[in-house]
Image (cartoon, rainbow, N blue to C red; front, side, top):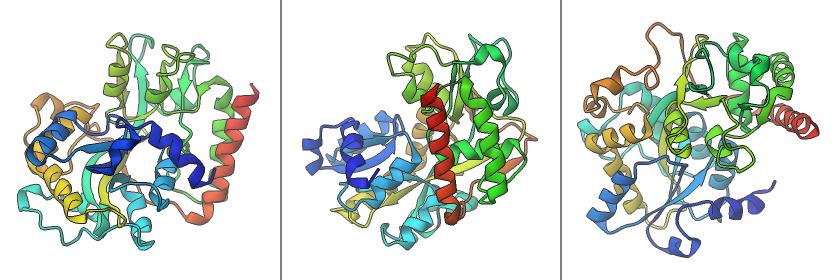
Amino acid sequence: MPCAAIVPALLLSARTPLAARASGLNLLVWEWGISPDVVRAWTAMTGVEINQIVFDNGDRRDLLIANVNAPIDLAVVDSAHVQPFGDRGLLLDQSGLPLPETSRSDERSRAMCGRYGVPYSWGNTGIVYRADRLKEAPRSWADLLKPAPALAGHIAMTDDQEELLAAALNFMGRPMNSGDPEDLRRAFELLRAQAPAVLTYGLPMTAQQRRDIKGRIFIGLGATGDQKTLNIGGGGRENWRFVTPREGAMVWTDCLVVLRRTRDPGLAERFVTFLAQPENGAANAVFLHQPPPNPHAAALLPAAMRDDPQVYPPPGYPVIYRGPFPTDSLPLRRRILSALLAIHDAQ
C-alpha cells in the first residue's frame, strides 16, 4: 500500500484529534509506549502538548517516517532502522546533543542508536501467554511455532515480517536478520505449518481489542512489557505474562529520533533531553515494564523490577543483539508475509 494511502488511517488512531496537531510536538510511538505521568510533567513544565501518533507495526511506522507529508516531529524507532533513515536525510544528527553524564545511556545502547538516535528503552522479543489458560508456561519457541492442538485458534502472531521471521529463524538456530534465501525458505515452511492454528496475524495487544477476538488469544508473539499492556486491555481479568524462550534473548534497543522535517528542532531536542533525565527514564521504564538504557535510571528502579525475568533476560540465556537485515532480502520477506496472510484468509 503506498504511503499516502496508509497515513490517514494511522493518524486517526492517535490519541489526539488531527485538528490539535498544529501545535505541540507530534510523537510517533508504540501504543502505550510512553508514560502519561512523564508526558504530563513535561507539559506542566513547558506548556507544550505531546500529540501521540500510535503504530502497531514496524513496517507501517517506517512508511510514516518516510512520508514527508506526515506531520511527525519525533519517533521511537528500532536501532536497526535508525542509520538507514539517517543516511536518507530524514533525521537530525543527535551526536552533539549536550546530555549530562547522568542522562547518558550505556555505551552499547549509544552505539546501537548511532549518530541519529538517543537510546529510549530496550527489551527482547519473546512469547506472551495467559497463565490462567495455559497449564504450563512456554519455554521454547517450539511452544508457539509448533503448538499443541489445544492452542489451535488461540494464537496471535504479527503482520510485521521482521518480527515474524526473527522468531522462526532464532528457533532454527539461524541469524534472526538472515537474508539467506534458504534460511528464509525454511522459516516460511515452519510458519506455514503453524498457520492453520493461528487466530490472527496482528500484535496481540492490538488484536485483543477487536470484538470478534477479545478473550480468545491465549498465546502470541510479543516483547518485553507487552504483558502489562495486555493486562490493562483485559481489564485486569486476564493474567498475561511474558517469557524469554530458551533459544535466546533477541535484544532490541528503541531509539528516540528527531525528524529533519520537524517545525521546531530545538523544542524537539529539549523533549529528548527531558526524557533522558534519570528520574524520567526510570518513571518511563516502570510504566513500560522495560529496562532503561541509562544505568543511572536503572538504579532508581524498584528491586523487584530489576530482578524480574519478565523485564530483564534470565541469567545464562544466550543474548543476541538486533541488527539490520540485508535490504535485498526485503522482497522475499514481504512475499513470505503475503503468502502467510493469504493462507490464513483462505481458511
